Image 1: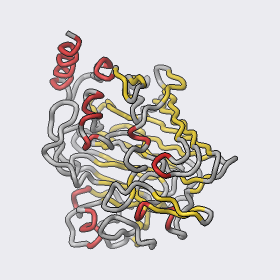
Image 2: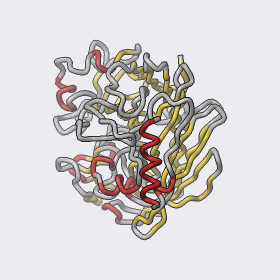
Image 3: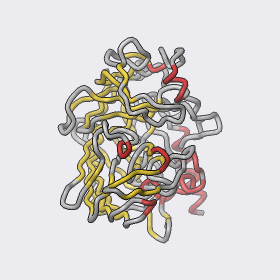
Image 4: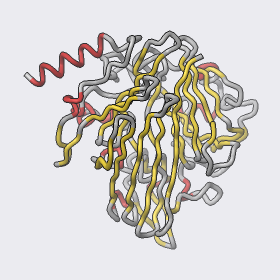
Length: 374
């Protein structure tokens, strides 16, 4: 009977999954389970302005995010799954909305050196380490530290040696929905031995609504004059490439699809955009750094952060075999990731900002996704 009720709830959500007059949160019973012997559930946060966000302890993951369009109609604008079972059973769902770490993005060869010692990490991406390895923070069950109608604090302690990383790392992430319809994500981490840390959120956005076509008409603005160019396996070369007169220049808002298939060697490396932009503004203070606008719905998402870089991935590897929470296909380039973070492969690139964390220091990172319309 419980499974039948869950199915009915999911079908109801599917029917109302686009342009609803109000948020249609997922049924929490579809997430009531044990993973690795620990309980998981689904938490719903609501702002006074109507922004509704659902998060699970599994991967500290954003599962759903309902935002209004210019007419006041709501859509869920992030890719996700309608049950915990799909996250556990579908490898493609691994990076739908979680916190990624201990070190987000790619580390060349799955190796780095710290204080004269080389550390080896799982090579889970063409001979390199990606988003923390085989079982990164996205695949761990986090602990609820506090929860209200508008805020959820989660913690995870990563023991020394987990996925090859040195030092025991204590991490806390706090999600808050604000008065101005923003999702604020604040990370904090401490270690008992020298280590590396670079955390980010891997939500995949389509401001028309999950499964509503491609994002190629979305207009993107990034406050960045350079990218960190990559090789054919998306490992940074160590240099900086000016964006001027290239398809990577989003200093003036431009449609994502306008130049995505241009004859450019860097675009060929990623089959589209999958690169790190170097913000022009100084890191260390929270400031407006990027925005995404969808003309049909009028939805606008502004990104504020204190980090030095933004990984923009244009959903190049989605296939029609992928479905979201409402049964609709996630087509190629059907969603984008806009991940605030330090640069890829920073542990091996002396010219990049450091991701080293020592005992007595505190890693801090703030990312704000603020929603509005125009």
